Amino acid sequence: MKDIERLKEILTFDEKVFILPHYGEFGWLVIRIMRLMHIVKAPEKIICCHPGEEIYYPSADEFYYDWKNSIPNRKIKGYYTSLEDKKQLISKIKKKYHDYKIVDFSTIPIEDNFNFADIIRKIGLDFCRRLESVIIKNIRYKLNPKINNIKTDVVFGARKRSRSSGKNWKYWNKLGELLKKKGLSYSVAGVKDQSYFVEGAICHAWQYESPSDASVEMIQNCSLYIGSDTGTTHLASFIQKPIITVGYQPKLDHSEYLSDSNGGYNIIHANSQHFEKDFFKQIMREMKLIK
Image (cartoon, rainbow, N blue to C red; front, side):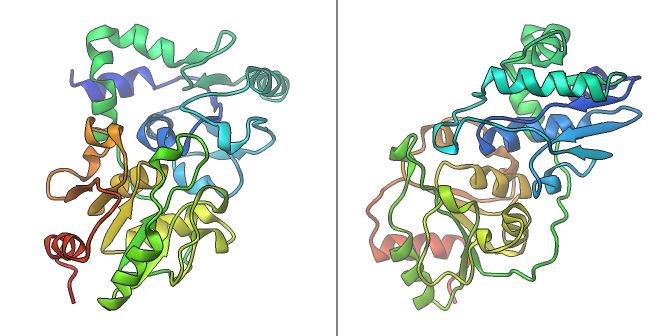
């Protein structure tokens, strides 16, 4: 049996399921969590998420919103969560959905629910070592955003977070100026409190009712995505857009986390934080975006 078929078999349930939310970084949601949620098969599937994030879970039968994450965005790391928040949520779920199986894809599970450890136990250590690659290369599906008519030549993933601030790249305004001189339009994906405001952008995703829908639509409609080591870069990879990554990004340089976009999709790592006009022209030439 192929790896992906084994994984789908493990995530097939006879009873109704309630899937706990992802408390961690958006990038890990895209790399792993939302994909696992998508292939869960059950008579009924309820997914817990924030309002406005439904676009990432098209296979859900219903959504649940009554939950909180008391850890502020600036401190969120990986799958990090408040165990007290999760305990309170589970308690509420058991009272209201007592005949549902609770599924938790966090690497920090609590109580006796189906969790990530159950997957590892069932697939074995050998499969576990290649699990991330199997998920990224085999689980992909279409995202259907609300129509906002957002279309620009280029989309920026302009990360601005206090945690791991070395991954932030500060030259978005300069890059925008160079794009405008070439007659190229650009927009900015992401959320307001974790992104740079870029001068001259046609729009920023957080101007819309759902920044998630806006981010997906602008990435789907663009010709090129440029971003640092951030969640929207993984989203662009999931959508299979040509990508240029900028700034300090050891994970992106030394892993397969962007392998959605490999095989016919260009990934160019522009690691220098100081770039000259000729360097920019070279990249644009490779991406065939020079007008």
